[in-house]
Image 1 (cartoon, rainbow, N blue to C red):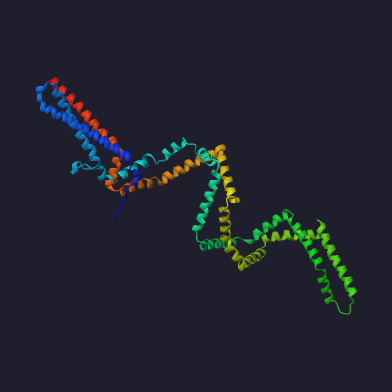
Image 2 (tube, rainbow, N blue to C red):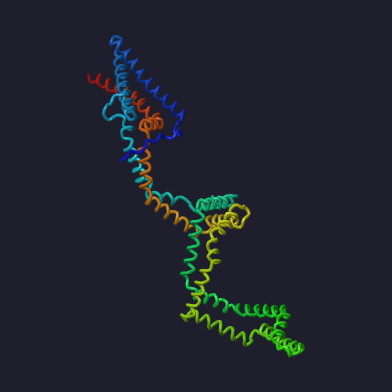
Length: 425
């Protein structure tokens, strides 16, 4: 197995001010150690001739140096080998970097990425209220509608038209072939009959037929003349034609004006019987199904189904690019309505809050391990020396107080110990 490549830490962690603060604290801690060393050296040179107080000062300075050196060693051992000597159990962070990353990931997973923690946190957060306030900001609905349209337009550009077109055409063709035509046609005719629309269709057809006959009266008269024997006088043909033509027109007007005409009753009964046959007669259903199949196999229908995606995409992209389009306006209205409901409707607010808790809990349970693994693997890829330096930059200033405290507390401890020893002696 190949090792993961070393990833340098981001330069955003560089902080000149923090680095200067670390150097200042190091100088202060080292200065206190040197001051204790100078005092100790002076006490050694003076010896006991200057008075008993020299012993107390010497013990204090000596203990301060010991405390300063011990804490310097402890702080330095976290980040590197003291004096570059490979002393065991030093350079802890560089040596244990991968384990620290894994432990940090496990710590985050066990203490932060749990359903209980998320539930407790969300219980104090008004999720629908915050979401509603965000959506209700003036101009936010229009901006979101534009962003959504742009995102969807970008998505459509990523798709290959040929693939999507074939998929859409295949889906439409498959659905149309799989859907029985007879029940659908029966339902459509039932709606037409129940709404009395079939009679309106018949009335329109009769009016159209009457106008068609009137517009082509000369043509029909000529046809009668051609069919009539040559020995029949034209005036006889004219009278016969006028009589028949007037009778047909009168009949059409009569049926069109009389809503209770016998022809309409027969028409209604035949149509209802056909609807019943569509639902109950296999032969009738088979004929409709055969007609549907023949229609779907027609080249014009196949061309139409293949052009569905192209036409829809063109219309959508045009609407998405137009700030004043109906699409953008509808999306903006939906955003505003959502903002209002999230802020005012108790049922919507309760449902959104409940779903937010449920979704957050699911995501935590599903992906907490992955997030913890990201922490561990990310730390493992960091450069060892760079990691140590950056961590020291972040916390080293506070760690220098350990050296300072060791110097001060060590000196006080040495003074107390020396004093007690003198009293006992």
